[in-house]
Image 1 (tube, rainbow, N blue to C red):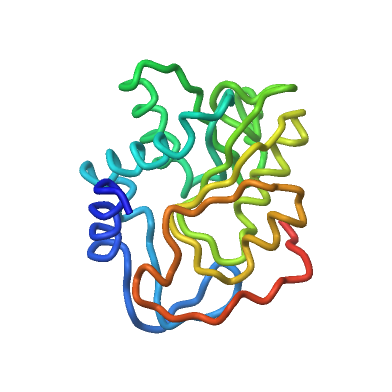
Image 2 (cartoon, rainbow, N blue to C red):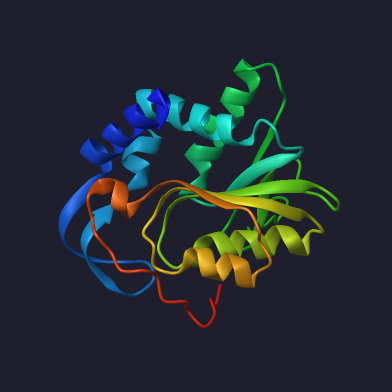
Length: 195
């Protein structure tokens, strides 16, 4: 694990990880919760998130990076700033929950999402992967090729299997829930995701 990863994991553990009883977006309950936004909008960890994703994607040829609002917005922003600091332009984007009813009436905000674009989908914390799949399907409808899906933390509850079903061959979380000391069984493959 790199120094950047070690620093980021410590911040995620202290700012984002909580024990208790929590209802998840997926509908299930959990004895722990990871609020990735608590770290994604903190200056030190935002920088580390951008650098960690940059290091894992700098070798790839792609046009834009983003995901579903709101979890992916600060992560995409941190990443495009890191790309800028390393001398490479990069477009960021986010996918709304629904089409905006005023102005340009867009579902996808930001640049670089157009037919033929190669994109990376981001999310903060994944359980079943439904939010990332919703973003993935939205950019595919625009004619984009999704070359990779990334997340800050994978709860190991089936997201990887869903991405395989969606034809994504490159999925990479920065951390898994096991990095937080939570022992979980191997994920059971969900039948499908309704995004």
